[in-house]
Length: 146
Image 1 (cartoon, one colour):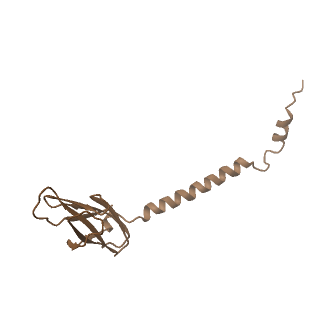
Image 2 (tube, helix red, strand yellow):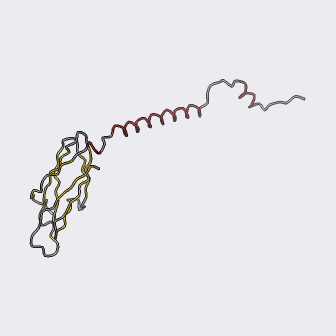
Image 3 (cartoon, helix red, strand yellow):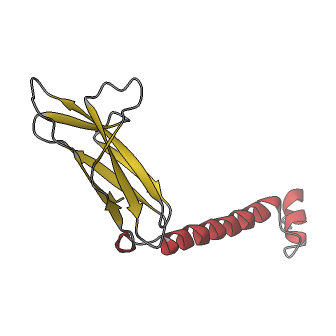
């Protein structure tokens, strides 16, 4: 008794060391792309400056003219300097004096400020008196590395 294999199997088995198929090339390409992307992500993670190397200095409050349309009683400017040796982002928060509300011009009490190494920017803070406050104290700003 002789067993006969289907015609397609004979062709597939006739040359087992033949040319690889299209899915093989696609899989190899995906493998190479994945290794390349993983290497780039690893290098970005390793080369990112640590929070310890970032340092920000906030200057004293200086009275400033409020921008047109700003409904604030008074505005203060604060110089923010990146003292670190790498670019970084500072998370700055306003601290209002008693009887006042202090906000950045974005309308938020907290703002993210990206700075290059040794770059300086001025942050404007609008201060509005609450109720019937007779005096308006200066706001303060604190900044921490993001």
